[in-house]
Structures are given as structure tokens and as C-alpha cells.
Image (cartoon, rainbow, N blue to C red; front, side, top):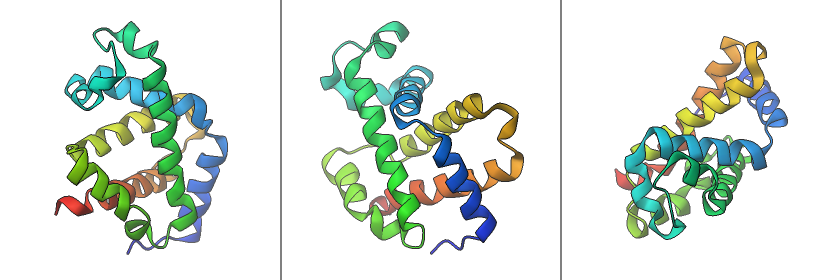
Length: 147
């Protein structure tokens, strides 16, 4: 179980309070698919992902970005039991979808870049540290079924 300080919780809540899931979710997934093109293999049913413009303009990519970020947001309400919160999703991604668990980290890295771009200098290092800890806990929980 991850131990959270009151300050970390406050920072994470502050970041989430300023994230527009409908904007940041698509941006993070688009960035992930463009920067790490091998991650596209899990999205064969999404249609054309052959160019950056195709990825950015793809409504299925945008929708899944919202779904992914909404799922990531779920941890905020379950910070004291993140592993259990993501147990079902971990099984789904490992046993049915066969997603490389490192892709969760890549998506979270892309999300951090999107968040930093939106926040600018107001995303102080101590806030980012709490955010990275939060994302790492979720990535670990999502990858739990793989271990």
C-alpha cells in the first residue's frame, strides 16, 4: 500500500481540479501513439493511425483518451487502495488485451507532459513529485496481474 502525506494528497487533488479530461485525455493518448508508434498495435480497430494528423484527427483515439484518463482519475477516490481499485482492469489488459504493461508508464509520461504544458510554471517540483508518485502507483496497480 502506498503511503500518502496530506501535502501529497493536496497536490494531487489540485492537479486533478485543473485537468479537463476531455482535453488532456485525447492529447495524452495522441502524444503516446505518435511518440511511441509501437503502442499503436493495440488500436488496430481505430482506423487510420498512419500519420500524426490521422492520429490527432481520429475520434476513436480522442474517445479512448477520455476513457483512459477517466479511469486514471478513479484512483483519486481510492488512494488508500489503488491496487484493488485497478484489479479488474489489470486482468483485462493483461489476459484479454495483452497490453505491454510498460505502455501504461508511457501514457502516464505523456500525460505529465500535457499537464506540465497546461500548468506551466505553476506546476512546482513538489507538485510534480506527488503527481509522479500517484501515476506510479496506478501504473504498478495496472501491471499487477503481469507479475
